[in-house]
Amino acid sequence: MARTILVTLAGGALALGGLVLAAGNAPGALQTLGLWILVLAWIALVGYHGARAERQERLRLGLPAPRPTLPSILTREWSMIQSIAVSILFVLMGLLGLLMAAGAADSSAQFMGLGLLVLSWFLMVGFHARRAEAEERARHGAAH
Image (tube, rainbow, N blue to C red):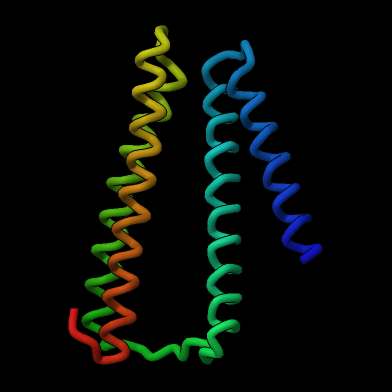
């Protein structure tokens, strides 16, 4: 419990520092750095708390720890290539949104850039969640 509180406070402080840096009157590069810090701290906190909640739910339900089984080499390679390609596309889309937010002169273009950044992150998370769920179902023999 103490570790969770410490990680949450550290991530919150890091995100707040990024927010202050992004909202300041600094040039575009420092605003971009602040946005990156803010977004990465948020992603790290969501990932940490998601994994912790999953572990607690498994423990509460009395489920065993997931056993890793390896799919065939062809499936893994195709899945890896597809995952890398889609991740690169969404990262480029998010980077475009970040550059739009940092370099725009008016607030509507900045808002649109931030919206593009958030949308790309949600799309990437959705893609990887579906892929992970399909792999897990395939490991346990369930139909897709």
